[in-house]
Length: 202
View 1 (cartoon, rainbow, N blue to C red):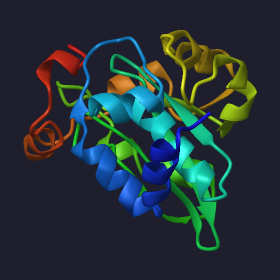
View 2: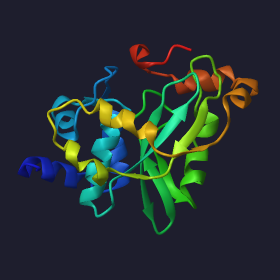
View 3: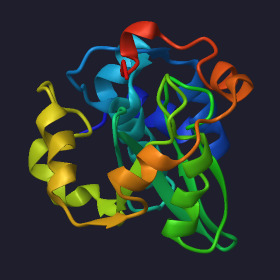
View 4: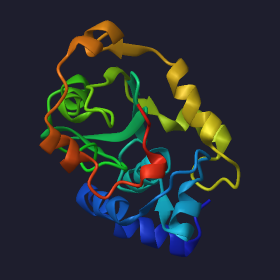
């Protein structure tokens, strides 16, 4: 599976903080196809699914199950977060093209509480709040036939299949459309440094 150097590098990302810092340093990849963690390490770039898979692989070497949560948005990009649980609660690691949808510290009592911490900061380029629903934790071991850790193949279809799993509704489309837009200062902060080619054009 992993080469000696790959395993050594992933094990050097020995805490969620170190994994998140590594993901933050990756160049954002606006291309829709998805590469395995092996190729993210080689290329130095990645989008949310690619970064999430790498985070899951690194957490797995720390003894955590490789878990992701799928976030579905209305009139906006969908997103995935890699989640883990410690004695203090649920936390997340995330690669994002925005500044506000990255990781969360492990102080949340449930996955829902963790996901809701994203709600006020999940909006499109017009400032419309957009987080509609979320899945339960998805154990990536169920996708081992994709060889997602080291595959040479495009994993986009695997990621898209997450949307076929059961999801929990946060707010319906009509409710989201009625909510007030977020303030301009928050929009500016959220998209600071974003790759415009990778943003959903609302």
